[in-house]
Amino acid sequence: MKAFLGSMTGRVFITLLLGILLTATLTQLVSDLERQRLIEQQRDQHLLERAEQLVMATEIVPTSARSVYLSVANRPGLRLEVAAPQPLAEPPTWFARSLAARLGDGYRITSTGLRPASCDMPHQQTVLYGLIRTQWKGACEALNVRLRDGEELRLSVLPPRSAITGPETDYRTVISLFLVSIGVLAYLVARMTTRPLKVLARAAQDLGHDINRAPLALTGASEIRQASAAFNAMQARIRQYIFQRTQMLAAITHDLQTPLTRMRLRLEKVGDVELQERLVGDLSAMQEMVREGLVLARSMDTTENMHMLDLDSLLEAVCADAVDAGQQVELKGHAGIAMLGRPLDLRRCLGNLIDNAVKYGRNARVCVERMNGAARVRIRDSGPGIPAGEMARVFDPFYRVETSRSRESGGTGLGLTIARNIAEQHGGSIALANHPEGGLEVTLVLPEYYPNK
Image 1 (cartoon, rainbow, N blue to C red):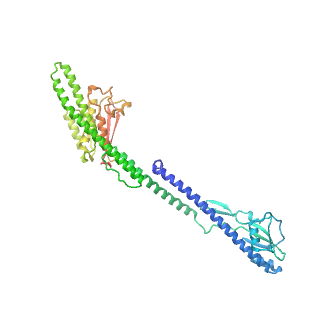
Image 2: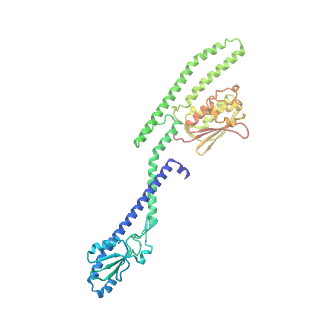
Image 3: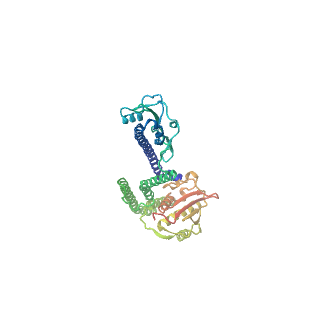
């Protein structure tokens, strides 16, 4: 849940959900309050019409029978009775003015200072799915009514017996459906909004592993199509840059071979044997650096096709070649994985790791195993290890740990860089750690399945 809320989808979802909830709540509240206002107005108008009819009908009834008639004619919400006038209240209320205007001349309608006892009782109504209660604000008062024949009556306008809410409603069901519908809508909008961003993010991540991946499809909104087109153009420029750099290094390497060969031939004519050996060693180191530089450039090129290969067979072949070359290499374990990969690149990656172990640690103990759909290859040597502060820097091109890996041991400082590039091209990783029992342990993890393969 924490990861979801921290993602772009989660943030957009929460923002939309809160915005929709706030908007819907305010809209529903305003709608309910307006509905109640209209109900109150309609009821007041209805009571006004009934009061007019009741007063005029009472005047027709003989004076002696008016009390009996009113006991039968009165209905809930309106009560007319024969009574002495009450003290006046100024100014007259809206209901008193409206009733006087309807009855016309000859009648006297005045507001009293006394209110019916029921006006002070709570008459609440529910709004916003029953979550909020409001007080009834319709007409509730007592009026003095004097008929044209001079008789005094008292008209009491009373509140409704209960809140006018319409049919009984299960608000829990309504609220649940309301929240679920809003949540689903917000989630769909969040997914629709962030999906193109996820596609771009995944494409950017995959670009680091496969520069030759297929370009993004130009679909969706105009802004997304524009961003996808810019991404495709960037990928094309990077691919062209890498190709040109590889071609340039290949040309330089080819052109250097002739003068380096001539230099080697001329060095054989040097009379000083010790000087000759030093110069030949420097020349060999120069040739090795040129060759490794070209290999490093090519390790970032993924034009080689993927093939199904048996990792165990590949490891056996690499270790056998190392043993044939006089290196102390031991292989244990079995991965049992047939995976897609570039055979030449993986052979170079494993060969570099084993060569490093033998070169700087005298021997290499290789252990391979299968775990969670991936193969883990551990290569341990018997050397002095690497200081913790140097672990990350040894992957930098041409970087060497001088304390334990001197120039006398040979190498150009590109082996681990090339190996890591190849591993990442296959969706894998390389980690270094000093073993508790001594020596450096290199762990190579290669997944059985990788989306870019």
